[in-house]
Image (cartoon, rainbow, N blue to C red):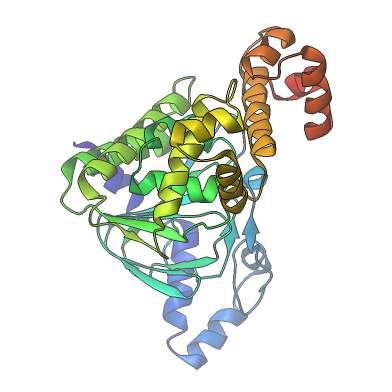
Length: 347
């Protein structure tokens, strides 16, 4: 049996939730039938499932801390439950919707995006949308932490390309696009990569290699999307050339956070220091020094949680200069000492 057949066998059967929502959907076709259906719903069911006519209080903003069960998990994958009543919601992480089979209706803000077989839609955080599947179609939701996206995926996106601009605008600027959509039907490589990603997440017992495999598979998917589908991709909003230039500047700072100064960065790109300062402020909402300080802080957090290096060495590696300055800055930005942070977050 092929990997696609294995996944189909796993995803095709209706779950209890899907079967309930399918019956709900069919009952709604007739007012009389629907009222009878609602009256027969047990309290144990209405407490577990979202039923607009009974319990309209549904989460509208989903946060990383509630969705991701472990700080180590950067990626979560799940099947979208068919026939679920669409509800408008947003989340503070990236969502990547893949049409494994069939079609789906994805309304992003006020824009209806008709998705078909093989389509991949990447949604920005904090964007309200609804997703509807009312047949046997199968859609896969791939959830990606925004908080760790930088360290995990940004090296792939360091050039002036569609995904680099899209993610950079989300992570560092106030000009984010709502979504980007790729049409990959017929691309056997992307299909196979996503098949392995789905299998690794839904059909394999989690072990010490699972997170690494998922991250590398998704990074490879991004690479093939850029190679084969960037030209035909659809990006909401307008792509600003200036933002593409800023993606290069921000990536430069990512690579040289230890030693970069406003003057050396401006000289590298042929700008004046005052011009670059204004552009960074306009794009990110932060001054150059504040933005660079945040990069160094994030690097320090990553080293504290992922290594047992001495704090003095981490201070130097993160570009803080003196250990005393590092302690003061870290306490101001996090509300705790580096040692305390390490105790709570060390993997």
